[in-house]
Image (cartoon, rainbow, N blue to C red; front, side, top):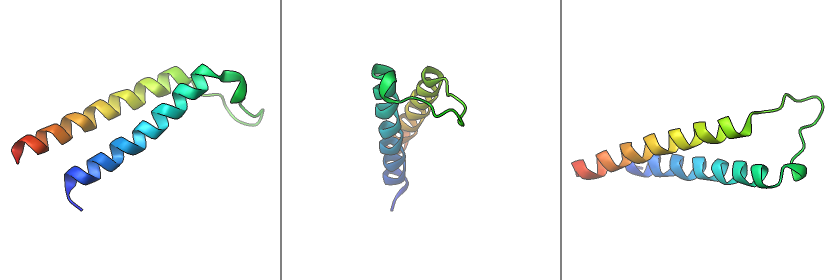
Length: 67
């Protein structure tokens, strides 16, 4: 598998987590944190995911343009 395909797989995986984080933000009552777990700052987590996705997309574009 070439590097561009690997990057796309990572982008797809990140997108899955972005979609889930958006569902949690939209429906917080459906995703309660169990008492034994530490709550996550979902908005910070989402921002981190978006930054990672953007960096991967830039890397993919650079590789694509290099031919």
